[in-house]
Image (cartoon, rainbow, N blue to C red; front, side):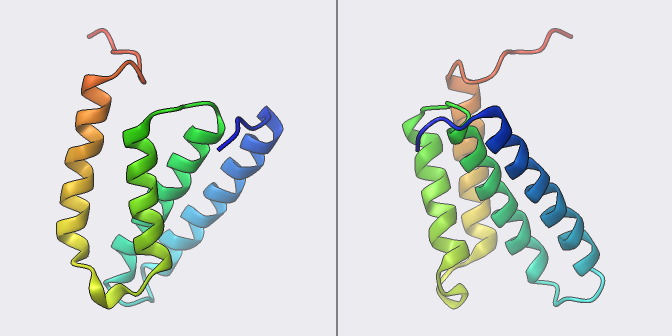
Length: 106
């Protein structure tokens, strides 16, 4: 994915915000299983924005691609809770073992 302009990334962040707000509202009326799927979709969108902003990491791309498959594929074939456990572990490892984020001082 090529690096996006600040404007393009800003627009995508606004769309992601609208998605998160409508997803939060939908949690009151939608089936319980929709919440985790919406969170997975929001994570997928956030990773796409990270890549668009210039983050170039093979594991980040692999996590986003896996989320693409889940969100855009048939839900019946996926144990979403197990998949999210696995992707959380992968993401934590990526963040811990790379220089993608600056460690905070406490």
